Every structure is written in C-alpha cells, then in structure tokens.
Image (cartoon, rainbow, N blue to C red; front, side, top):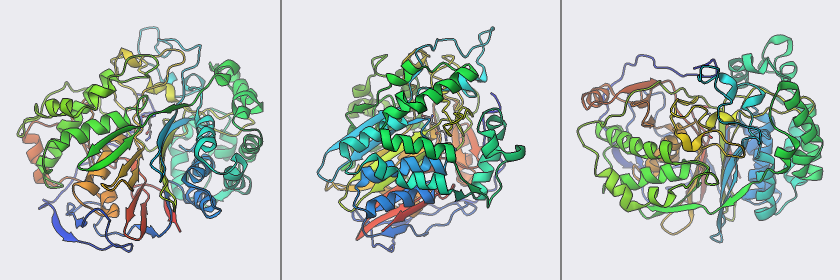
Length: 584
Ligand code: DON
C-alpha cells in the first residue's frame, strides 16, 4: 500500500448497549413521508449523531451535493425554468470548480435519470483505458504493483465527464450548455472563499498535488491555500468558457484536447488526440427491480453499483421483516448478504464490451433466494483475510429533483482525492487516476482493498469496473420517493443501500436514515467494517462470537440524498462531510 492509501483506521471504542428501535411517529417540517409513518430509531449512546435532526425542506425542488455553491448553481438553473437534468449538469460543472477534490471535468461518472412522464435512462461516462495501455503496465520488474496506477500521468483514464454531461443535457435538458455552465464559469472567475474542510482536503493530498502543475495555485509557497482565502481559477474559467461556446468537442478535439495531450507528453502519460477523439459516452438501459413494492432504478455495468445493491436488496427481501436496526442479528444478516453479493461483484463484473456480464443472473430474485438460503443465522461464513481496505471521500454524488417530479442521480469521480494529482497546465483542471479501478494485478488488492479477477485486467479501451451507485427509488404509486448515491469506493454500495433500507424497512426520516451508523462487508477482507461507536459493545461481542472479523473506521461513506415528503422534498447532504441541500 502506498501513501495514496488514505486510511481512516480503527480506534478503540467505548460503546453502550442499544435496545433497538423505538417505533413512534415523527413529524418533519414537510409532514410525514408519503409512503408510511416514520419511526425514530435508537442509535448507540456514544454515536456521533442524535436522532430527530431536521432535513432541509422545500415545497418545489431540492438538490443535495457536497458543495453549497454547486447546489445553489443547480437551484439557480431550476429557478430560471430549467429541469432536473439542466440543474444536474449545472451542479456537475460547478462541482468541478468548487469541489475539485472530486468534482471534475477530468474524470467520469454515471447519471440515472427518471422523468415525471415515466421515461428512465442512464448514461455511462466512465473513463476508458488509453489505447496504448498494456496489461502489466503498473507492475515493477518483479511483478509487484506500483503506485503508477494512482499517482501521475500513467494513472489517467480518458475523461468522460464533459461528454456525458453534454449528452445528457442535449437529450433531456431544455437549456443550452452555455446557460447551465454560467454559474460554474462565474464561480471560477469570481472565485469563492475556501473553508477549513477544503484546506484539510488539500493538506491531505498535498504531496501529490505538489508534484504537478496545480501546485502554484493550490499550494502557494508550498502550503495549502488557507481557510478564508479566495480561490480564483482563471485557466479553468477559460476552459469552461471554451466548452460552453464550442460544446464537448472542445474538450475532445479542440484547444483543451491539445493542452491535455501536451500535459500527457510532458509527464510520460499515454492519452493521445486519438484517445480523446474516439471517446464515447454510452446510454444504457437502467437496471430496474422491485423491493417491497418499491421500484428501484440503478446503474448497470460498467458500474457494479446497481447489480450489487440489487443483489443485496433481493437477498434481504427473502426475509419478511429485517431484524431490529442496530442489533447483532441485523449486522450479521447484512454482512452475510453483502459478502455474497461482493463475491459475485469482484469475480464476475467488468466492462460489458470486454466480457460477458451475467447481470440477468445476478439480479434474478430466485438466484438471490438460493444465495440467501446459505446464510447461517448464528455463524459467519468464511473468506480468507487479506489487507484492510482504506477509504476516503474523493468521489461525489448529487441528487436533484425538480418541481415537475423529474429526478437525476449522479455520481462522479476522479477516483482518489485530486485524482492522479496531475493538473493540466494552461487548462486548469485535475485528471483522474481511474486506471487503478482496473485490476492492475488481478488477484491483488486495489486502493480500496478490492480483489478482482482477470475480467477487469488492464486492456486498451476498457472501462474500469466501478462501485458508484446512483439510484432512484419510486414509491408503490410510481412517484419518485428517494434519490441517493454516494462516494467511498466499495462502501458506496453499502451506504446507498443502507439509506434505502433505513427509509423503506426501518421507516426512518431521511435525516435519521443519513445519520444512522453504517456497516460494510466486501467479502475480502473478511470482516465487517463499522463506524466508531456505531455498534453497541454487546453487539460487537455477539458478532465476534458468531465468527465475524471486525474493522472499525472513523467514518464511512459520503451520501447525498433527496426524499419526497408530504408537501414537498427533503434534502440531506452527508452529515459526516461537507455540502448542502438547497431547495425552493
Ligand atoms: O468508481 C469507483 O468505484 C471508484 N473510483 C470510486 C472512488 C471513490 O469513491 C473514492 N472516494 N471516496
């Protein structure tokens, strides 16, 4: 593991026993949720959040993202009559300015769209491996993985963000690129004041940023920009202006492409003009399933998010009701279900252009029933222990609903914080290190401890398998109920799915669902990851007695979600991180 493996490691916990759920109706500012009465869960006594917090409420529309400036950019477009897709694209470009640790034009992502008229679509704008990529390019002379898939020019996949957002806008938006990009351009030109969280993020990744062209702007005098300073991004503003004026071709064939390729040549990277010119975003049929009467729309491969979260939901649906939230029985069941879903994820999923992905089987409810029937209620199954998985918050998800009831769920990433660290000189943006999501050495763990097989090995033109899980849940009447997704590598799947379970099964308000302690199991390493003080000591004892390994983390998953409530929408940006839900 390299310096890029930014772990949030276990600390000893002193926890108090939790008695479980206390069902009682709560009323939020917007009234009760439309599907059913909400209940107040019981959180462990030492848990960092209390129940009963309020979500942001608005009667018409709502956006939740990791940046207040970006949420406001989207609301500005909505107020000007734009729809949810217009607003989502505005948020995406604004995040590239105000949240450069993950927001980007140098990365890629996935968008799930559900229109009020019932149409649904997804667009895959994941990065692809450059044409000159080779299977063993990240191994040293002894066949061991190096950090070249995480830091520097070789780590960069061909970016998809500009193409994806532009195509989504052209197909389902109502406004021009120039209109929806205006708030982002303004933010880049006029700047914004950075806060301590921004400073901490810069400090955390400064050793990588320092090696490349972004150092002079982000680390003036070698030090991260101080909280309170105004960040003006002139080169980025120019790049955004060119894209707004000339469309996505500017990024893939114009001056921006020239600057990107020049940057690659300076640093020994692989991306050429040909790579950029042939980049394609792909419209894919949304994955669709039902869970306890709700319809769930998810992202198909090359994201594993939809397939894996559906498999988890299907296995849980074989139980008429779930064990009490916070109980050992619940943690055990969730972990065993995740273990099974992740074994399939890690061994069977990859870019469908390069291998046959058995999505139909993996999302089949009968198959889930078979898998779930192998769970012993008293005892953990076994998978051999490997290295612990680090985590970080370097992807970003945003959820948008408009007043017509259109919804957009988007997750975008540079992979690790500030991506590869490489900054395109003269064009003002960071480039991803998405190549590390390919199995750079099949059978060996990646930055997230994921151990994947040959199917996800490096090949030219291949899209790296992703865990991003942008999701839209419809209530039994077919209206949008919940828009959610997350950052956090493979914990994205767990975090997003748990917010869905908290809302549907545990009947929490959105504010509680987002604050509830989270769990994660990805098959390997063979342990339940839990948040510090998030499981009561007696529950930890029970899980140990069942044979579970336990791995404590300071914090897990960065979710941003919007939910329909009576009279409007609630929005909650991740309580463990930065951001804002803004509506009107
Ligand atoms: O696509 C993926 O699964 C990863 N590149 C996501 C990385 C991530 O979430 C990092 N931040 N927390």
